[in-house]
Length: 199
Image 1 (cartoon, rainbow, N blue to C red):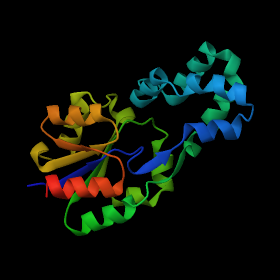
Image 2 (cartoon, rainbow, N blue to C red):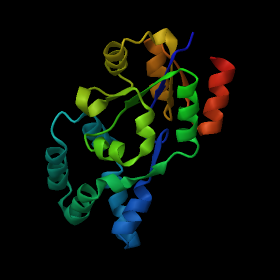
Image 3 (tube, helix red, strand yellow):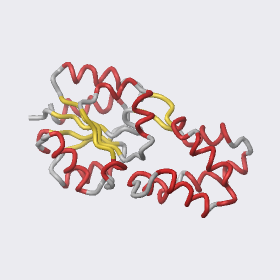
């Protein structure tokens, strides 16, 4: 019996947009085009998500390695919370309904320590009964340990949980530790799959 619903944050509860951010702060098209892969970069995202060193230390090192973009990277640091633009359409209402039906709701996210600014800005996070953040655990999805941290912290049985994430590899990581999942597209698709497959 499913009792607990687990949610990724980015692209599931809230939306973010690197490209609008870059266009806003770097209006020169060619400069913006050159900057994008420097910051919208898997290596950097993994460093920030794991945050084995503080955010500012990681970013200062990134500036040293990409000094031609120092001005733009410092703008990125200063305005980082502006990457998150809105709640995902329909999800706040859906979480309210699911909570009213008796489900416990939890978050499981790969995000740097700046996530707490986002949590304070958006009402949807108040629906959660708890959450695990990669930068606080120093492990990231889809590593098995981060899922176990969630289960252990809140006393959850994986077989009683359904996890949703926009990345299939993170769903597969959850399945490896005994938790079913749904690859998230939008609120309507998620609710339809949840109810048809698991409830």
